[in-house]
Amino acid sequence: MKHFFITVFLGLLISAAHAQHAPALTFNHQALQVHNLDESAAFYQEVLGLTEIEDKTEQPHIRWFSMGSKLELHLIEDPSAPEAPVKGVHMALSTADLDGMMQHLKSKEIPFENWMGEAGTTNSRPDGVRQIYVQDPDGYWIEINGK
Image 1 (cartoon, rainbow, N blue to C red):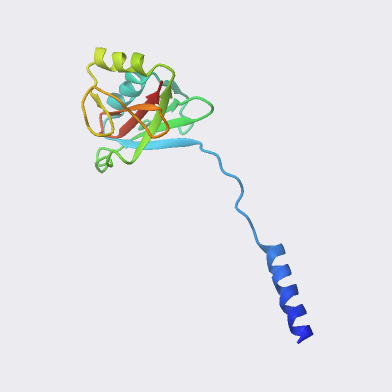
Image 2 (cartoon, rainbow, N blue to C red):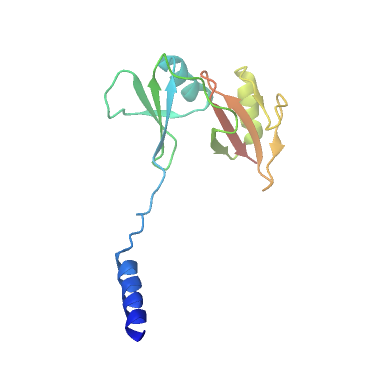
């Protein structure tokens, strides 16, 4: 019986030694399929203020944008792309001036709403951060949050 427990213990020890853990991951980019590349690119540049960066794929149907801190947004033109997902599937951007962003959106006649769908207003998340939601030309939802 003693040999049985030693064998089991050694088997578990060897298994644990061979167990592999996934390497650490960091977020790199978000890719969106869009119907009209120029229209979507204009929205992300002119409305959200993202800076276009070099598209290292050099493909005419793809454009890349910086989202800060080495994060990127890739827009990929595909006229047959499916409809955008529901509001619960969204990307979130932060600003230090949410009121200023809401004024900017109003000046460009870009509709926004809170989580509950009330137009032109904000709400606070459970952690106290205020948020609004806007849709891009393809209907993708974008949360903009801040103070």
